[in-house]
Amino acid sequence: QVQLQQSGPELVKPGALVKISCKASGYTFTSYDINWVKQRPGQGLEWIGWIYPGDGSTKYNEKFKGKATLTADKSSSTAYMQLSSLTSENSAVYFCARGNGYGYAMDYWGQGTSVTVSS
Amino acid sequence: DIQMTQSPSSLSASLGERVSLTCRASQEISGYLSWLQQKPDGTIKRLIYAASTLDSGVPKRFSGSRSGSDYSLTISSLESEDFADYYCLQYASYPPTFGGGTKLEIK
Picture 1 (tube, rainbow over the protein chains, first blue to last red):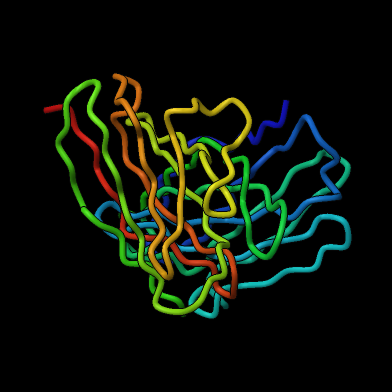
Picture 2 (cartoon, each protein chain N blue to C red):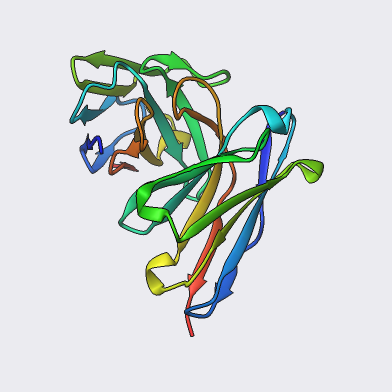
């Protein structure tokens, strides 16, 4: 069965960077996009971008360009998202989700990774 | 960006009750809409895609429909495990956007 297992919670200082992971199993990792989505309490869900692990191509939401960097390691079937120059606005839960189907459809979701930015 | 206006933002209902949630798209999305369920532990599950196609394993009490730019999720008879947050997602065009969510609570 398709599973996306995300890394654990992170507590990071303002100005630092963090890299969270999403390990895929149960399907061919290189054949589907991995999307990343941000959720802040009371702020709803925002799409950050996707990466296609097959060739490493990426597409970002304009709002997150320069903030998020998406990469993927085919050998371990793991996608990564690095967030840089962190501020309190980046404190959120981040989800990975497999892209499948037309456009930006997302079917399976990871369990989420909490990132807290605090000194 | 396409705005997805979801209503109501919260809903209190009883077990066995029929409820409907709605998302209105600010632009044409041609039925490219999903409904997502988020449980209290944070896990997200897709219930419906293409406006009305039920994902595998999703109970048949869930259904989706479209009327023009309005998209609805209906739960025909609420069960205890249905009390959760629900979101719509349009995936027709860049960037994909979500509705603001509906918190479904037990009355």
